[in-house]
Length: 390
Image (tube, rainbow, N blue to C red; front, side):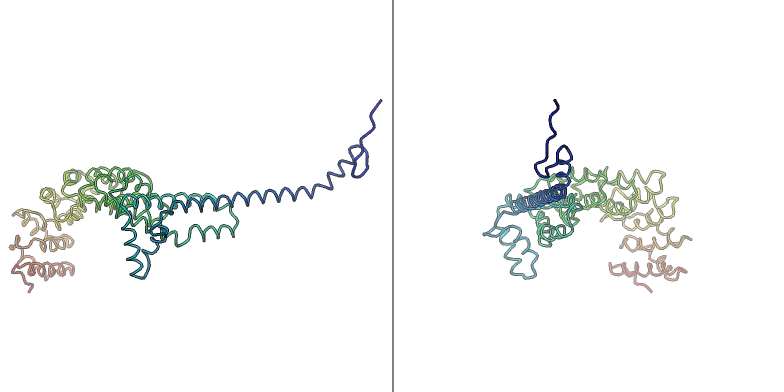
């Protein structure tokens, strides 16, 4: 015997028809209820994330000086009122070096990397109004200035900081913070060279520029980074070339043997770059004299002009240098005559025999030759040489 069909307690209909009718009636109500639950859950998650960020940021900048947060004192350092700046500086100086360095770098590291990374990760998923509110509260001008000032203060406590921690700031999204980190590394001495060599060998152009600047600030302390700087010159990047040349020139005389090998090669571009490095060395090292004399007879016209300008700075200045300058001063190439006129101006009283030839160039057909001859004669006269231009 079959069972009687069950009836619905809502509509009274028997069988599955009653249950289908009830489900159709309740569908809109349950749909909106699920939407409301989802919206509430999303709002709760966002609120928790914002509160967590606030707690994390407050913990980072929670170091207090005389009852005020560290962030407030850092902002006061940029005040337009001298008394406020002096008060903030005195307050920061009262902190022992090690706790001060730790507080500063923690503020830069966590408030920058943590919040910026979280913001960039969620930026495209947030509603427009909430997005603008986060910008206003967590990427505010006050926070940016506090981070930048903290990064600038790192240069005052380089002895208490590890180069590896400061080196990570080179990759910061704020270029000002990254630049201050590079300056701090440049003040750390030889112990920052391994970090800078690693940064110079990477692919980030901004980081490599900052590393070159830091190596230039280190000068002779960064001799270990010469292979990386020479490799940068091989890449022929217009921006990095200029910075690498500056860094190598400040390591004089250590790069001279490597540059001499470049001058002895058949690669014209290498020879020109080597001469550019030598040109920026102040003073020109004694070891560079043979290479400059050789380059003054180079087959490449541009290399010959660059070397001729350097002949006036060669020490000791000999008869061969005077002969090369005289030959260049009477050459058919106006560019070579200009370079010779410039070079003679740096000889001082070591090339008095070249003064008559230089005076003849005052009537040269090329205006730049006449102008540079006049300037060199004036320079020699100021150095006490009887070479007043007539």
